[in-house]
Length: 123
Image (cartoon, rainbow, N blue to C red):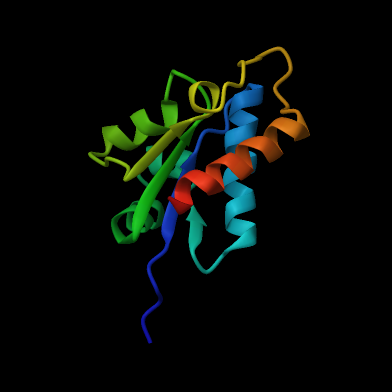
């Protein structure tokens, strides 16, 4: 039997609190619902590793979670000709101020963003 297609989550993992939130959100979504979600290794995609390219091409849909306005995750996908179905930016969409001096996110921010994101996706 063929494996069901999954929603592929592509997230920032940058050296800031907003990158940490994006990464934590992606991991939490996959952990909570591995039948529905899968993650992409963005670095492997950037160097054109075949398993990563295959994941992208076989995804049910693609959600990008960028940490900040640089939108690195989105831009890396764009270099491969891929446009996400859904794209969010932690700093703008969830009003989290980017902090590069403390690259770890506050747990309260992670939880707040996670709950808000789930509401948005369910709409």
